[in-house]
Image (tube, rainbow, N blue to C red; front, side, top):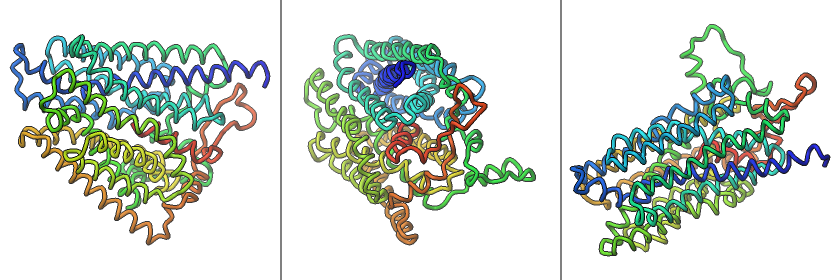
Length: 498
């Protein structure tokens, strides 16, 4: 290795460390309401507020709905905006939005203004998911051809540990400093994130290689539909018909197979029965399992149990991805994850919650490792970006609607056991979707279950433009088939999952 290459290698790990810490701070702040749900209810329903329990339940679930709603369109807008803003300016803007959003939530909890808290979640949502996509683009550029699977897998795992730390620390912080103190801790995490992002990009600028130009011009292909078509391989291109209207072109781009829509529906249902449950898990465990335990002790205990879900995911995601990639049988693993998640919801009111949450964590890990490669395997290569965009939008639609339904059921029935029956219904529907997908794949020869199926799709994926210091001669393009299958799997998980 030459002396000029050594700084790039060393800086690569600095970029990875900063990105991991930054993303974990974002996840920490996002999950604060779920960790101190019961404490927030006590504050907003206290002597200084006239809010009823039904109103609080509605507003609490709305915190996650208003976060998800912007993310049905912002990833697509990100791809277009990055074209003229550049990724560095975009990341700085998103970091500012995250900081302002968390600050508004701190003010809202201090002033007992749920409207201000909701406004803060909207602003936080505008920056959250888009920040995840942009950071993944940064790491993909720095680690292209150099341990990219390890880098993206570590980034995802450390981010999940941010959620685990929130479950463990927020109840204790609230016990000493109140609800506002817990949100201020999230503000500190986000503030350190906002400071890290410029550090990453200032380092990139100081290094001064062709990577800077690549980062400025590269568009997040899986979510930016209008830019995706520019970088396709010759054999994946289709001629544009100038006589077709915009509507006809859009319908053509979004015409997918039945198998894709089944995978997409399964994705929506599974996220809807895992993440919205995590939002209300604290209140559920207090009501069902620990109604007589002392306040301080129960909050610590519930935080520990809630940390199991994302703890299992953080430790198991890279391992599960590699195993599924080696073995194939993605539909079988997907169907198994549907079944485990449904069984976990049956067990939650009946069996020790540690066991139930561990099973739910395993199902979430297996599901995330199996579903995103299936999205690519069910569509032609030229529609991969559109497929991921549609799946992401549908997923966020489910995450926006489900909390509202949960709040209505809880208010009407007066018990979280009725909510569990709703999650069981969703789980049963997901198993049915998985069975239909398995039957259709069997009729076509089991192609989706074959490891070679996804490798075959990779060979026709679009090339990613990487501009070197001298872009006038030679081609520095690297197509995804030059990456290993594990690399592609982990890149997919970081860009689209969440």
